[in-house]
Image 1 (cartoon, rainbow, N blue to C red):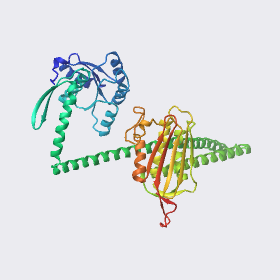
Image 2: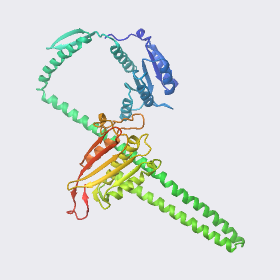
Image 3: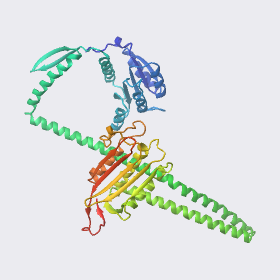
Image 4: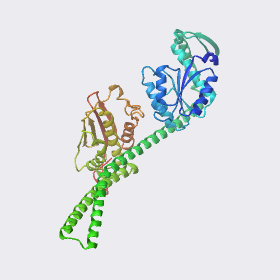
Length: 466
């Protein structure tokens, strides 16, 4: 297929979204030199208005912008029925692999880094325009060079001929595959390269999980800090009030004008203020101790003995700030004396992610929901059932919910990592299994089975080992 000449591009409109006037002019001049018609917007809001007025052939957008970044703009374009077919190229100085992944997940058709490589940028634009022409044309005539039986063949084909061409290529591929079977050394090197790539992907996944784990811990810290603020604030108010009364009493004492009534009033105020300060400080200390244990467990990953109900109540208590503005009910059905030797931080992460999943997904637009956590023990396993009566999950998504980055709330705060973390913790750390049952409008049920081992042979432990 012949490359497009500069004069062939005069009818092709390209919308540039760039908050830096200097860089916008630089890119505009580059494209205009190659015959393109260019419109410039300084932010996402202006870009959407321009796109509604006249649909461009391509949208080229910077990522780091005020008001609406490139990710959000791309997601709005791809969810708009009138605009979703417009190709989007994201441009940025970012080099982090996670930023690139996020850009592609937002629906971008391509991703280019600054400073611009002129040839690469123009080739990407040309590639997108050619593909658009092929999709829109009723007939395709293609000059294709292929090798069959070691000989070169040039075939001009229409759309209906493509199937025959693919069959021929497939037959030749079978022949080539038979020859490749004797190349064991090359295949071995390919397998090693694939194994190396798999390890790199695993490392990337582990890093993402660790990042989400730390983010969850940060959210927990913020919520507990908010909860501690109330008793500390009350204590400081009472302390300031007592300080003022002490100063007043001191002045009266120094002037020799203290009456019995003044003495009794001061003592009463001091007593009440002291009680108030002590009660609120005690409340703050309890909050800190509860948070400290959960936070240490989440970050250390060490095994220890703990009572399951007592620990889960601490986890629920630390999440209270997130639920207290709702009418949702959480019920815990478990034996009070169930003690296990395991990783408490893992249990905290599992239930925190499940609870957040219910709050943000299951109870979206639901005023009053119910969560039930049931834990039982049989001879070989600890069985945990987690259920909510929320919106449920579409059956077509059930086999994807544990996949990394899968979310039905892309662009609305959903990362697609929470349930993948739960799956990895259950299957890899605790060596258990997890299954999910759900129907739309009928809530969700997670069943987690964890193998146990009696620990009576281990004198320093008690209960069950997981």
